[in-house]
Picture 1 (cartoon, rainbow over the protein chains, first blue to last red):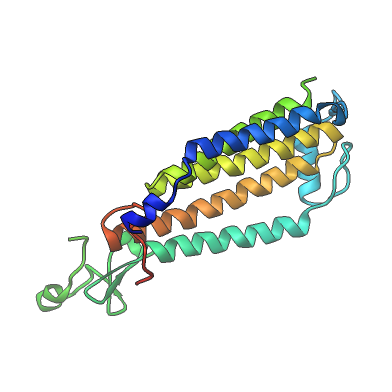
Picture 2 (cartoon, one colour):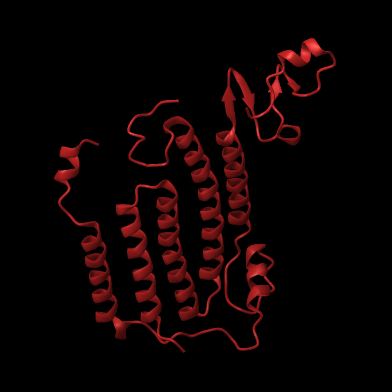
Length: 132
Length: 100
């Protein structure tokens, strides 16, 4: 973004955020009588237990709720994808070699082998392992 | 019992603080934290209305939102890492071009 583009943005971000809060607060307070009195939960209800029942769609809960087993599984897959993505993004390439976070002890992979396993000095000289 | 309006006001305030951070911060880590504030504002709303209706669905939704926020942070930090390698800085304004 060039300087001329920055000068074209005349709205102060702080003022915009405060103005948005003002609008939201005005709407909330003007409709204050429209919200029902909080029903709350039974005093003897085990909330965490009932959340567990709802998560796995067991249907034995005493507090009203729906089953979320399919959602739970989809979120689990999404978390798995995120973990794989983070590992992929954290991978570093130096001199054509790939340094991955999932090699043994964080060692560099050179030509399909774990670095530092060279048998001879000649092989060790070719090893560009490490984070140097 | 606390009226729901107070929860909504708190949620609005947290959301606007997050919005201010998104609009002003150039450091990618602060940017990510501001997005988290906005997500947590949504969580406050979900749990407040769970209390209003006496239904656990809102709390379960909040749990799912927290899980998705964790996934977002994992990918976000990976992107910040790549940003630092390619540009030597984590200023979000530096990444004006798409390159590998």
